[in-house]
Image 1: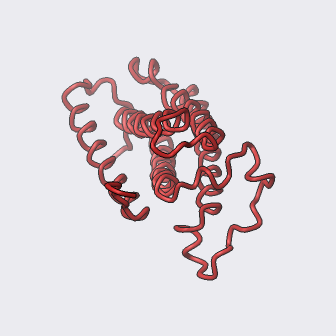
Image 2: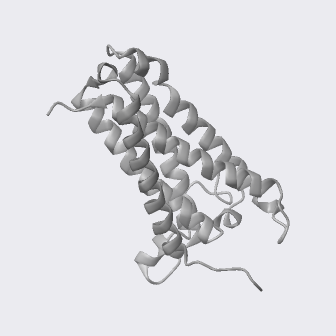
Length: 204
């Protein structure tokens, strides 16, 4: 209304991902000057797992932007269920099947939550596998960072959903704080994975 600017959710998601890509590139470039080569280890299997998690996280970030753009938090302000259901009955409510993935608030909500649980589980697997390896001193000190951040991210996501019922137009409240912290932590999570990717290389 009034001076408010509306951005199509899909465009918002693309803008967000491209911005994060630039942030990661800048961070990687900085690490080349800051991290000594002797802090880097080689492990092909762990590197593949890391890239898989990064791919899932990228998809998750897209759906986070779709959640924000479609204001989907208020569509299911409950946890752990989604309006009383584990798998919502109206996932494919729209006649155009593919558009459910982009426009259906409940479908977006379900995918965003499910990806969060999968990524959290994969982070645990990552940490367990790293504990069995001979790590560089720097990696040994920071290996738990992605798991710590993703745990915070999941909790902030839950609080964001639950507090979405407190939204008052034109007023900054508990939901807005939770949502902003949720987005900030998402960026930190991505950077933490870039950090680990930099310290664990594949054998060329």
